[in-house]
Length: 283
Image 1 (cartoon, one colour):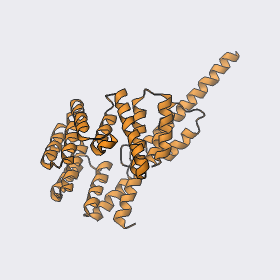
Image 2: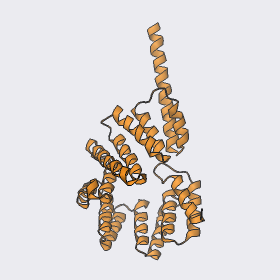
Image 3: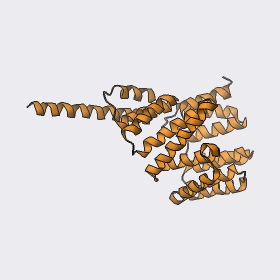
Image 4: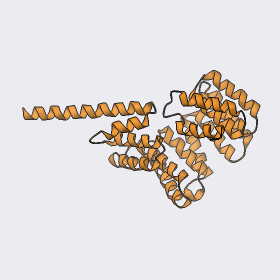
């Protein structure tokens, strides 16, 4: 009888923990990061998934230090999980962006190592592959970056996803200042994935950077027709206007709509939108 009671208590405890985790995950998916953290903090014992979710919440709240700590615990608990290593790399990357030059190089090295480990564990982890590509593209050679490495990754991406592969090739061409080639690849990516609004946004942003504002605006209009009121389109259009110092009133309206929209973790954080809104409002 005591054994039966003990098993029942353990089962009830595990069920409660699973329910709490699911609730925390749902809150995270609705960008309620503080609320998700509060639920997770009530767990008596955190498994690798709960540790990783805690890290994701801290990351989304802009606390890269705490995020790193929890992702390190997650990979220690589950060292074969590609997703956890990818998130660890993202957290170190954020710290590299915000650290002083002496600390930044160390964080960048750990970013590089974590992304490579994530891809090694799961070559089909497309998000990790894409982030490793961006690291190779942006980082100097002494930090493990380089266009040759980025080109090799771009070819791997193209084999898996031709549209994304063309986007990667466009990024390389733009880095080399081969702008006609970059535009050609962006337009090819749009042709290969005609229902993906992100491909249209990529071209609109590129055209704006080239000072071709009328074409950029027309492309944003096409994106709006494809995905009306898509939050990421509002944000991208506003950010592009602010970067060019034009259409600032429209940018302000777009950012206000963005902040009022229902977002997901895939959208830029509200904190970044507020920073842009402060810039355009003179705050």
